[in-house]
Image 1: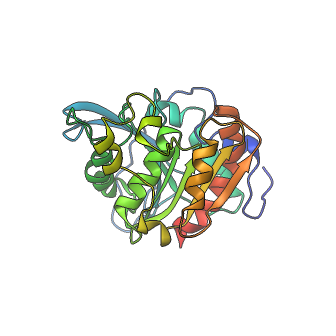
Image 2: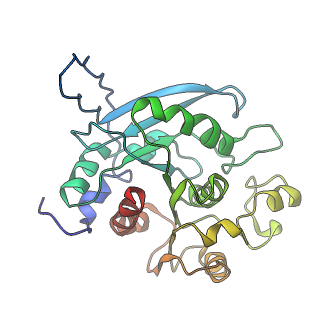
Length: 276
């Protein structure tokens, strides 16, 4: 693939999580003898852990990196939408997409996905808290696997777009390098929310992403289709942000076709912010 200064082709970024399902292979690292150059990190790792925050649920995770990386990379935490999981985020050849992103001139970064269930990435009345799972369990466990968690990015679609805003704000400006919310599941009132998104009025208020002061200090990008059912609420959300976000509205709906069309520009926007 020919290099392009900071911009990637749609075909390249389709491999970054929105393509057809692909098998995942985990590779071990070879031992390093004294005086030997460091071994390159594996391009793909998968595993699982029992999440206390999610009530003892076995939770799958996956990490993808470009090839040939010997140093710690900062991650994009990719949050799936309702009904999806980490495997679906990673489907389609993420390793190849990351390799082509670096070949196109972007700084290298890792992509990390994790199962979050359907609880909208925040604490629920059941006790499940997939947001705490990400912040207090997933991110701390990444450092021993060659991930630099001093600064992270959040990228999410639909339910995950809301989650990216919520968790990026909660991690805070000191550690959140960027937030990219794609077709975020946003509602202007508790009564407008989809069934199951919140446990009630108090839950909606406690986990609202509207009016958060942290957004004044975190780079944000929001992309949404003009035919998306969340377009009106997203427009109102953008209007109340302290600073205009990157991205914007373009023709499309609430579906994978729109999301894949936006991904090249989103990754080209996020990668330099992660490296800064």
